[in-house]
Image (cartoon, rainbow, N blue to C red; front, top):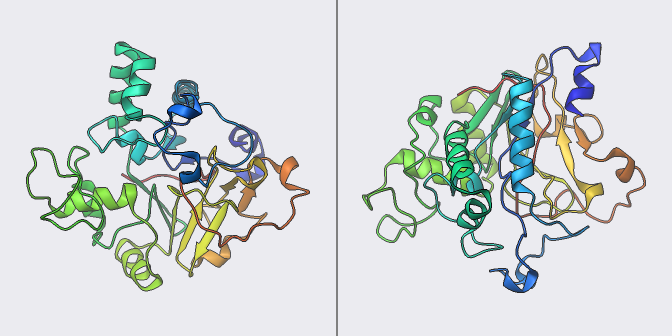
Length: 295
């Protein structure tokens, strides 16, 4: 889709942004999953066996072929490989399980690649992108620049009972709490979202992290959760196409079948309206956008 749009003169220069969580899916037999199937209600559609190595290779080759036009944000599953909390849906330690499959040399390359990924992207059309919901801790763009990927704190945990502490088990600082929120946080109230977005000069926050069975979910005028996870029906998966020369001031301006597009148009054409865009969620989404990330 990205390359096809790039060949269309009317679109001009096209950029592609992924919202993170490109890694980790079901690889072990079902009986060996850490989470039981009843605890994974978001798994729908065709069976999927993890293809993280192929996905990594495909994305890195695309980035090399189109320098400064293809980007991916850091997600919590990527962060698990460079000092973040280990994820454990389908294996006791999904980061270790993947690195064992990759081998030492490829795992070292992976760590180097992930350390260079940005955490956020700000589009000139008024949209802030992150992996999970933006944090109330975000007061200015400079706060994002101060983040160290080795220091994080669990969203909502009290300082005395944090289950995930910064490196060295020292009290966490605002940058560590901000990192934890941007990788693990849930949606904000409309008022909080307005406050955060106004501080960074944006109008809409777009993020993934959650699996939304309907493909997307709007929260007030300020937030859009976008989902194309392997855990969804293919016909429901959505991507986002934005015009960087436009100005989007409310999530309602991101319209189905105009800006919010099906990943597989042929499958979605005959889709029944069985799920509401408000049905909630559980993993990562991938937007397609004409977007210049800021770091």
